[in-house]
Length: 341
Ligand SMILES: C[S@@+](CC[C@H](N)C(=O)[O-])C[C@H]1O[C@@H](n2cnc3c(N)ncnc32)[C@H](O)[C@@H]1O
Image (cartoon, rainbow, N blue to C red; front, side):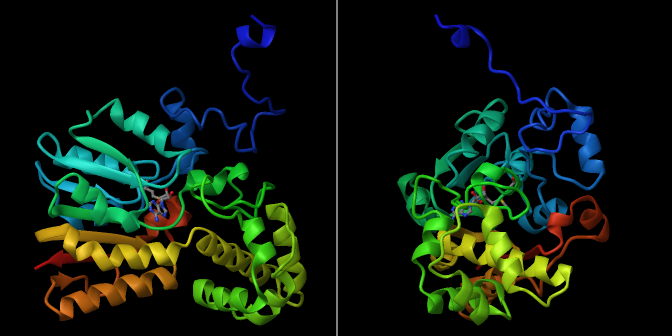
């Protein structure tokens, strides 16, 4: 046996008391072993590395009205924060299907939930939520009591520099929620035509400088997140620091949505959602920007008008000031619910 095979892998070292890098925060990655460290990070208004704080939890539970024995779907399992609470409410007797496309994070979440719930109560499905009707059909489920979706990417994806989602840390410009599928963000930008990028910047992020940014970025080669962020800042000359930062944020959001074909998936999901619910079944969706919220709002309103939904939320539910203080990532969240007639 080689020397390296005998030794357990060493955790990354860091100098000083306060680790800054994602991988260096080994205590935050292990909440079962270091609960005090994790509690301190959360109390300081940050998300511990390698986890995700579930958003608008009480509001989601109120809208879902879960009971023991309910059968439902969490279409965006993520870290499983929402799923864990749903499982507490519906078991024994109920079942949750947890869908996600992420082959890196989903197995970790499944391992945590599997320690508490057997397959009869919690089943993980690696699938795009656009395929929810097929997933239910394969299990002979004609309609479920609830469907929940918390759109966008998770904090684990966002914070891990190797996933390439964040403009704040250096990493490969990837942004794929499923790295086994499709083009990386770098490949997509290198191929995209300026006109297509301009439309995407407007539709995905309401970007006011879409034309100028598209002309500068389309067809260019950016190997890293920081290279793209630097190019966007160069284009945003004349804007103050805060506005330039918002521009970078909007460009990253645009490219992420394009690379993961998020609107195609969301439109497909919303088309079949009513058929996936039984009469009286509830759908709850969390969105994080106008492109998502507009789609959910229009789909819910159309289904209410045609009598498929008996009622839908009147406007949106947003996070309390206290939740925003504790978790700034919930600031843009909007909750909408619908009940099947
Ligand atoms: C905001 S996170 C969900 C967090 C989760 N509610 C929790 O409490 O941990 C969104 C998750 O949805 C997944 N996702 C995004 N688009 C998806 C799609 N089209 N189909 C299935 N999962 C998707 C992402 O991989 C990510 O894990």
